Figure: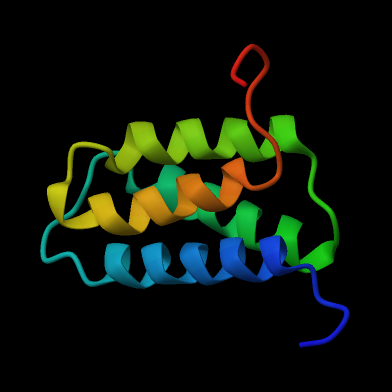
Length: 94
């Protein structure tokens, strides 16, 4: 994996996991399309190069809003959040 930014790899791995777990849900979420679209956007951003932190954060907020109340997805969502935070913390936070 020489030359690959580990942040991109970790975020992509987390996104793939959340997409897989979301697909395995036995019921439909009202905002599932939003989550699917934003997960696809995140995956494309990290695949194409160094993503823009504000865009990463926007996607994370939309995904969290769409799936945040599903406890089964909490660990995978936390991994995506950690992956986004590796690219930079929000202003005013350490």
